[in-house]
Each structure stands twice: as C-alpha cells, then as structure tokens.
Length: 315
Image (cartoon, rainbow, N blue to C red; front, top):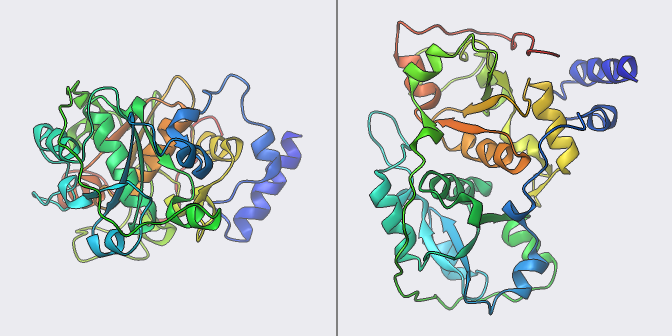
C-alpha cells in the first residue's frame, strides 16, 4: 500500500495538486494520530438547534459590517476583525490581550459561553477570531461554523437583517501567550525535530515566484512545508472542511505528529489563522508566528529559501 500511495503522491505532484490528498494517503494516517476536536467545528443544523440557547453566542466576524447588516444568522452579533488584527511594525498583529478580551465582552461573550464563529474574508475572519480566543484561554469553548453562512443558507435556515444588541459581558481571561511565537523563537527551532513549520500561503509565494511589496525577500523560511489554506476546503465556494482523515494526511505529509509542535505562518498572520484552526481541530500542539513572513523577510540576518520545500521529516 505504501508504494501505491507513493505513486499516487508523485502523480498528484506532477499534476500540480500539491494541496490535495489522495485517498491512499488519507487511509494511511497513523492510528495513533491525535483525534479531531469535534467541538471546534459545528454544523449548521447544530447551530440552528441551539439558537435559543442563552449559553451559545453566535458571532459574525468580518471587516465590512455591511455584509452583516444585509444578512446574518438570527441573533448573531457582529465583531470587526480589525479588533483582532492591528498594524504595528507589520500588518495584522494580535492586539494586547486586554483589548482582545474587551472585544469579545462587547459581543456579549461571558464565562461559560459556547462561541460559534462564522463570517467573511473567505473564512479567514472567523478563524482569526478563533485564534484570538485561544490565546486568551477560551479556544476550547469556541467553534467555527462549517460552511459558514453559505452552508447555513443552503440548508434552508432562517436569515435576518435585524442587528443584535448584546449586553456586554464579563469574560475571565486565562492567557496562553505561548501560543504566539516570534522570529527569534522560530530561528532557534529551525533544526528542532519536535517543531513542524507550516507556511499557509499560495504555492507561488512560498516558492518565491510571486511576492508583495511588503515582502523584503521572496521565498520561505527554511524547513517550512507549504499547506495552502484554501486547500483545506472540499469546495472553496461552500467553505466546508475536508474530512478529518484527509486533513490529517496533509499535515502528516508535512511532518506533523502528535508529539511535535506545529507552528504556522503566512504573509501577515491572516491566512495562517485558518491553518492554526485546522491544526488545533486535528489535535496537534499549535503555535502561531503572527509576524509571519513579512517580519521574517525584513530581518536580513535570518535565512530565506526559494523553490520547493525540503523533504519533510519522516516522509
């Protein structure tokens, strides 16, 4: 079976399907791999059944409030992603944790709330909100809505344009700052076999064939593996996640194991927010290099590689 899986992998690579996973690969995932955190992903049917549950707080996260004002899940509160990603030396940095806590309190999140997140930016905004909640210690009581508003609408659930007016709550912060790492931490762990570095950008940016004005040096961080965040979806329009077995195969192909820490990054920390969520959903110890490649590329003493990824550990 391994030889068949290897041949399938080579065929996929030859066709340019680097983000896709063969059925053989999915079936070969380790039986001892961490199990997905089912509570971190909720279906539209589950949310519909809990709309009247006062402990469930549904939050529409987006950059443009007009999308919320036009249509949203009944009772959903609006949270601007700009409250969770601010510009410092690089764009989209996590704000002070007190500000993160206050943003969720304004949305009515309190101790004991089960938070369900959905929204815009192709799914990046709610993933960023999950990451922010995780850093203040409430990630295990948060979930993404699988398929977001499109799936909700497709299943015939009600839509509202009436804005919710939540009563501000009190949320006890239990900070987990170790979930965020910086360039020095990443540089010190480049050769650490217990760390798997995942770059969530498009493959052409990872290889250094494309770039952006705020990237000082094209390429990627040495030892990083490329898992483009959009490839986590079965259907990019519907925004439903691939089955857990397929997602795990993708991460294992990148070298992830239950006893290794997955560190995600992208250009400025937004695309990697979705990779962060998927890694947490699969049960891997996960951290975020929030400054991401813009920060790394500006530090001239740090190494940069171009071209395809090196062979992942144990693959």
